[in-house]
Length: 268
Ligand SMILES: [Zn+2]
Image 1 (tube, protein in one colour):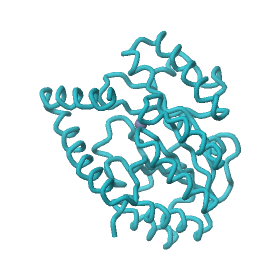
Image 2 (cartoon, rainbow, N blue to C red):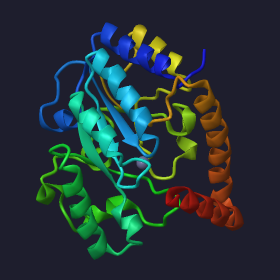
Image 3 (cartoon, rainbow, N blue to C red):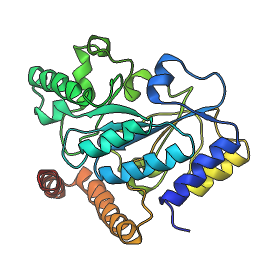
């Protein structure tokens, strides 16, 4: 069976429900965390916003509420999609990259951060933000919080800054695998749970066996699709992208080439 389709996504959600897990949004995890077994489904909408809507609809049918972080770039920031996701009862947050966009100019970055946050607050009373990895930028977007505080912006949490990952198990689908951490540039989290998964079916198995941690924060991007054509294309693209990213880490020529490709992609 193909992994990272809406069908496999559904099997994951249902496995959690059958094992007695409750779903809560990231904002709820920050403000009124559930005592028992619970999962936060976090979606970073880096691109392919319409895929996010399909995931949101599926979750809604199953009675699951999730958190969607949108970027300001047009591949993510699609007003019709944001409106519908809010209408389905999910949380919306801002996936910020202001320091990278401002090329490290902190004054400029905090100014645009406030403007972008206000923009997303036209759709939803945003209380959570989450940094975008900006893998080709030398600037780590989280450094925005070195001299500013989340609460000054009416925010209750930032996944990379506000969660104790020794208590909450963190999983991410970076690079189309649950163990693709080596492809990630910044969205890396150290965790002491000692669990490792490659395929979604292995997570489902672990939940069924009762070995999955009691609390989890799961990051699923928007590459999950039931369209065979899109699935094939995205798997080929991710295969090349992951390997280019790895090569670029040690090779400045490849690094420049990769950065140029990424810049062109986000400009179109
Ligand atoms: Zn991102």
